[in-house]
Structure formats: C-alpha cells, structure tokens
Image 1: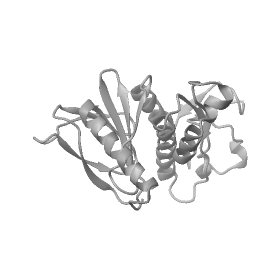
Image 2 (image 1 turned 90 degrees about the vertical axis):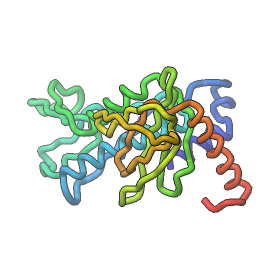
Image 3 (image 1 turned 90 degrees about the horizontal axis):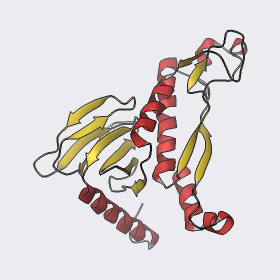
Length: 232
C-alpha cells in the first residue's frame, strides 16, 4: 500500500540514515497495466483514475518527485486483440513501423489528459499532508499552491459519497479528473459539500486556517489510533 510504505520509510528515517539528512525522496517509476475484461471505454477511464490516485498519494505523503511509467505503450499490438489495448502508456503507440520504444507517432489516452491536469495543478506545490477526517474509504490531500491551498479528494468506495468540510468563505475553483473547471461557493458558514467518486477532484482556494485545522484533527486522530483509543 503506497501511503503506508512511504510513511514507514519516513518514520524510520531511512533517507536520513543512508543518503543524508534532508535528501529529497523520489518515486522513480509508477505505472499500471491491466487487461480489459469488461468495457474497453470504462477500462480506459479506470486506468486514468488509478494512475492519478497513485501519484497523488505519492506526492501527498511527502515524496518530492514522482515519475510516470510509461509515456507510450510498448506492446506488440499485432499479438493482442484491439479490445485489450490498455497498457502502461499514457499514450497509444501509433508508430507506423511498429517501433515499440521511441515511437515517431503517438495518440493520447484519457490517462494522458488526466496526468497533464495533475501536473498543471500540482507542479511546484509542497504537500501539507493528508486530511483524514471523512471516514473510511475517503482520501484527501492538501497542497500549498502559492498563497492558497489545493485539496485533492476521492473515495475508493464503489458508490459516490457526499462529504462536507470547511473550506473558508471564498469562491473556489473545482477541477475534475481532466482539468475542467467549475466555480463553487461554500455556504454562509464556510462549509462546502462535494460529491466524491473514484475519480479525483481538485479544490483550489481552500483557506489556510481551514487546512491547518484539518491537519490538526488528522494528527490527533492518528495519535489516537496509535494509542488504541479509536478504531480505524
């Protein structure tokens, strides 16, 4: 599990011990391949969602850099049916000569567009940590973007889930998996209700005080779990 692995690495201070105090943590390769067993279109969307969630966790848990694997497919499509072409690539390999690596022509998958949105929104944003107060199956990470905060959130539950959390009183920008933006307004108390699914959403403009309060509650909740005071 990505989150627990990174936490264990940081807790044991392996980076400090082996490569020097304060050394950056790089996740050098993270990709996904799976065969299509149902709808090809649904599999493409799932590929995009799972890739983005994995890299959000990596960055949210404190890695300084993450690398996507791989730019384009390197399968020999002639040996596989058309309906199973969901491979590692962010892009299809459309090289007319059949070159598997370094193709001259590529075509985007949904994953390529989702990764572009992720990169555009998170580039240069240090993590503020996980916001763990929405219950089981909900992931949320905060990132500091210039003088404001961006929160990425999703659920691993099959059914969509609505959550409410404090964001401040300013109008926010909400982005979907592909980077499409809508404007959303919290209520008079600074609370915003968001419907979460397996497809991550980004909220840009969350207040600094609200993020700090959420982190404080998260750390208190984590400490209680460690001490055996609460069930996970």
